View 1 (tube, each protein chain N blue to C red):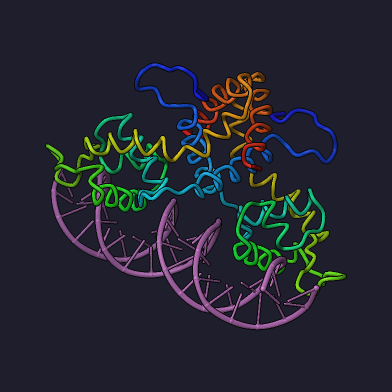
View 2 (cartoon, rainbow over the protein chains, first blue to last red):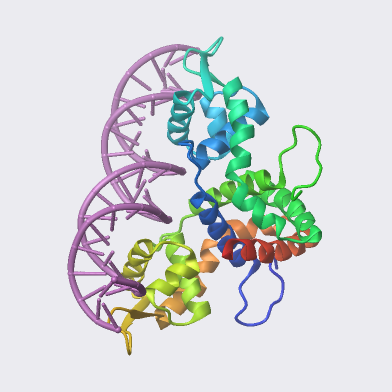
Length: 146
Length: 146
DNA sequence: TATTGTTATACTCTATAACTATA
DNA sequence: TATAGTTATAGAGTATAACAATA
């Protein structure tokens, strides 16, 4: 059994993980900066930096969203000058989306500003707890990927 | 330094935790059941079960949303017969929201159905990784609370 | 006058369905 | 005919501002 034996009335690991993620996500999205770049756009920008140039379809797959959702995210990133699109060399249907130099600078600067709240909370933890989260993040990422 | 020393180019713990939570949240919300009860409503219902009857303001504070957001969640739960409201005994402005018996039954049954996806992924982990998540969930919850 | 809650409104995030352009 | 992407539309989730009722 995935969640193991547990006392009556206690929630499963799945329940607690789900609620924890839903609530932390809520807090994270509530942290705003002056910037008009949203958390979803930041996430896509991170993927572009990490993976290099991608087609819209590839980026949607990486971010695990449907193509129409990514269309809007890419348009917003372009509007802000953080990503650019170029024609695909061999397939006229596709495009190549690349993070711009401005996007790279922005990602570095904005991530710091954006994470002030989270950094403060992380700073309140013990070294052991941060180490625990370091390892948990890898497990969570693996689960979210597929 | 909260995130400790790290190699050039590697993302901070805050960055990685933020992205992991955003993406897992996306996957979790994508898991739908036939039910018309949303994940946000499930979360509020869980709080009602855990804390007992609460005023709308108290429930909003527990869930860390603004009062107008909770107004809509409570109305939906009422419509579904999962929660009920009673007049506050001493303050006519307030109300007391209580989870119904149907809400309790629903929460138990629906949580299981809803978490099939997450349970499958948890089942793919090692015992050590699940143990790690158990402890990480507590840390994340504490951070999300305040 | 202060507090609690609701109504009105708007924006973000995301999806599905229908469409266009290219392969 | 199949694939990649966009446009159109809708629903969930959340917020701020303005209002109503009660303390």
